[in-house]
Amino acid sequence: MNKKRWSRLSIHLRMFVKLSIICLYLSVSYWIASHFSLLGMLFYPSLGSFTFLLMRRENFKKDLYKIMLGATVTSSIGSGLYFLYPSIFTFFFVALITLYIMQKFNWDAAPILAVALIPFFSHPESIWVLPFSVLCSLVGLHVPLWLIQKLENKKQSSLSNNQIHMADKMDIS
Picture 1 (cartoon, helix red, strand yellow):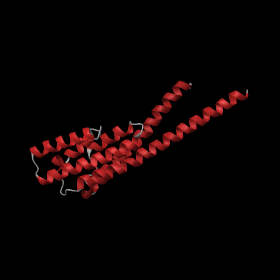
Picture 2 (cartoon, one colour; picture 1 turned 45 degrees about the vertical axis):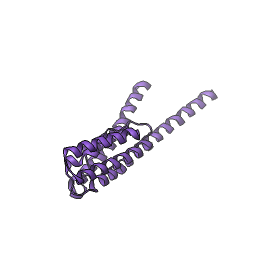
Picture 3 (tube, one colour; picture 1 turned 30 degrees about the vertical axis):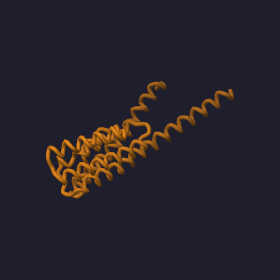
Picture 4 (tube, helix red, strand yellow; picture 1 turned 90 degrees about the vertical axis):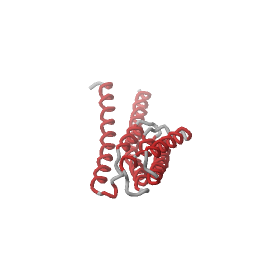
């Protein structure tokens, strides 16, 4: 197998491993949410969006912390205002406030808006359930993303060590 072909196969294999880890996390979150009614808000469609968004970023840790803060704050605002007065006017106000906050703090993750609006569609039983669920699921998302980053760093350091070793062999000759 030539080097170029092997390299492409390696890239596809790494992507498959990365996607498998993420899908496993999403599946476990869904399973937990569907079997324990108290944790029903742990899984939500925006979690998949957060996953995809963060998986594609180089410095996911810095972005993850900003996104966790933004999602928790806006889901708290959405949940609080929903419990105060659930209506189309409140929905509009939550969307407006969330978009303003996203612009002000440069939070460029569309799922932040989505989690702010979840209470209007899911009708949670308690004001704190959604913000707590969002925070827990994003903290949980940190684990598979961290694992993926560690695997990629290990692979890259292994490749660079092999390249150094090969260069040393060439210098000796």
